[in-house]
Structures are given as C-alpha cells and as structure tokens.
Length: 103
Length: 390
Image (cartoon, rainbow over all chains, first blue to last red; front, side, top):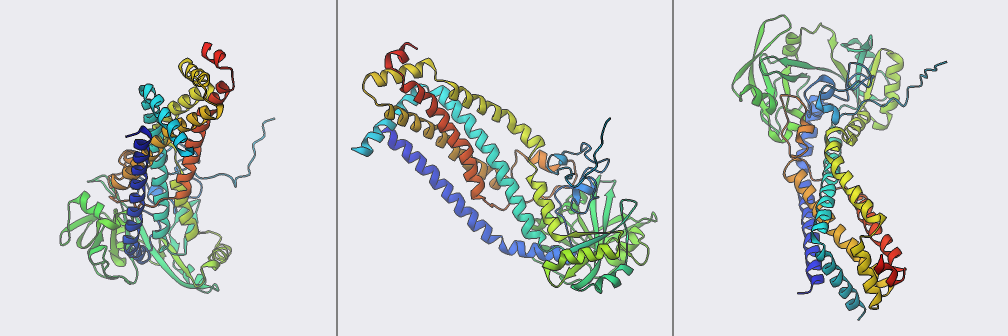
C-alpha cells in the first residue's frame, strides 16, 4: 500500500474517532437533561448559590457570597494559602480609582 | 494526472519524513502533548462553566446580605416587610445557613435549614428532607456521609453554640449525581438550625428575593440598596458570572504544568522557522537540480507541515477529551481539589466548544505549516548549486 494511502487512512480513522466522541458528547448531554432539571430543583428548594467544589475555606466554598474586597480574605490581592487559589482568581480592581502620587 | 501528481509528492514527503524519523517523532510527541494539555484545560473550564450556568439557574434571583463594619452580618427579618412592598418583588424568604467545622474529621460542612419544604423527595435524594419543625432530623451530602461513615437511619452529633451535643437522625442522603452541589451539606429543620447556632430571634443569615420579571432584578436590587444602605444585593446573573470568571482563570499549577511543554514547542517551531538544516537544504537543491519546480517544493513542505500538525493535533484532541470526560481530568485533579477534606465526586458533562477547538487549531496548525514553508521558499528560489554548497 502506498504511504499516502496509509496516511489518509490513519487520518480518516482519527476523524472517525472524533466524530464518535462528538456523538458520545451529544448522547451524554441529552441523558443529563433530567439530571440538570433535578439539580436545579434541589438548588431552588434549598436556595443554594454555590457549587460544593472547594470546601477548604468560606470564600472558596461560596465565592459568590464572599466579601466584596477580597477573594483571599486577609488583604486584597494577598497570596492564597490554599491551592484553590490556582482556580479562583483574586477580585478585579478595575473599578478602584484611587491613585497614589509620589512627589 | 493532477491528483496523482499531488499524491506522488505526498508519498515522497512521507518518505523524507521517515528518513528523519527520530527528529519528527520528537516534534509530534511535543506537539501532541501541547495540544493535549491546552485541549484539556479548554474542555474542563468550558464544561464547568456550562454546568454552573445550567444548575445555578435555580438560585434565587437576588440574595440580600446585611453588612456591618465591612463584614457579612445577620439580616433583620423586619427588612422583609419593606422589600416585599417594592414593585416587582414576588416573594421574600429568609435563608438560614452557615458553616460547621468538624474537629473530628477536620472537615468544614455547610449547614442550612429549609423553610417551607416544597420538594420532600427527589431522584437525587435517598430518603427525604426534614420537615420545617421536625426535631433532630437531618439530610446530608454524600461527602459528609463518607467523612463520618454514616448512612440513613444512623445518628450523628454536632456541638451546638451553647456547648451541648445535638443528636440528629439521618433521614436522607443526597445521591452521588448531585455531589457537585450537595457534597458538604447538612440540611436541618429551621428550629434545629437556630438552636444549633444559637441564632437570635428575628434574624436570618440573609434573604432570598424573587421577582416577577427577571429583567427587573437589577432595578429591584438598586431599590433595596437605596432603602437599606447597609445591604448588599447579589444578583443571580452575578452568581453565574462569578463562576464564569472562576473557571476562566487558567493559571497556577495547571499553567505551570503546561509551560515547559509550551517552551519546548516554541523552541522547536523557532528552530524550524529560522532556517533549514544543511541536510534539508541539500535535499531541496537536489530536487531542484533534477527538475522539481519551486511550487512542487513548496507543496512538499506544505504536506510536511500538514502531516506533522494533523498527526499531532487530532490525537491531542482525542486524548484531551478522554482525559477530561472519561478519566475525570485526573492530571489536574490535585490542582482542582484544594486542601479540603470533603471532595465532591462528579463526572463532567462533555460540553465541546467548537469555536475554542477551531481557535486552538488555528493558532497551532497554521503557524506550524507557515514555519515549515517560509524557510523552504527562501531555499527553493535560490540556484540549486548554491543551495547544495550551503
């Protein structure tokens, strides 16, 4: 068999695998529709606001309910003590307009 | 004839690549690894974002905190009377929730009570939720059950704020499928919650506000802020946006993992882009001398770039998908899990963002092909004997 035919066959095989993964993704997502509806029901009944992804500290457990001024509590922009800081960003300070001028 | 000519050039390209197989296999491995890591990060963060969006749609439209001295303070229930009168507000409910640090397991639980029990059972709950005034009953998340080795029908105790032990019967456990939201929850009745944390009468942790028309939520929040300057309304949109930002944050450990591979890839691409090896130049000279056109040489180099980048890109994407959605992103798990005792166990929903995949393809495959063609073009427009002499 020619080398180009082998290359095309292998590429076609990889594309077929990608198509199969895409079909897998669609089937999985449609199967999960009821799960999300049930989860939304639990969220709305218990009035939850956050995911239980990180339970290492209050501001990591409920990032949406944490203090306005810091994601990492001690002082704004401080370095996180937990590895969660690699995922949860410090707050944005775009709205802060304080300018310190050094004369 | 036309197609045959292109296939012949491709055949020759593959032969030429096989002649330098160790170098090319090295490039393919690094390229695949780069695509695998970037692809995994993209799949992971997009899937979390979508999942957060779909699930948190059920959150209250506005949550109102009371602030005192810059800290979250218990909210007065008397605020409810004024808030319900704001036009557009359909319902105001108090939320009772907080944390409980369990020194025995060193885990931090989220304790909450529910008001009127709308949903007593759910497919995602084995057993049931406690009734509003039911004493000494609790429904717990799977993470708590695992940490305490308890099941439905067992009892467990928590230390109340006055130092006494409160014993609870487990009447429900949230199923594994809901762990993303419920892993560390302990749901109690309102009276038990108040007794456990010694909450003063007329107070709640915060308030949940519901509006008739979702588009009016911002106006309602503004009115609440005007009426109660010590309040802090948090909109559901903000909650969803926070999760967008949380999962959009791709740095730290994950990026550190990836930076070595990225550097290796940039060096390789730079090496290719800045010049051809003497062997490659000689090959181009010989091909020109035996009658190949400049366009044929450029086509050969195009095929070379395409073969290497496709052979790396497609398996990289396939491996990234398998890694994230079949193996739970096990490579990133240490960075994702943090230092907590309770980890939710979840299977990510396989959301694919085609725009991101196409962008990844555009920023890796196209520059690679370009970096292969450009130096060859320079060599192929030079006289064959000069090229061969180097």
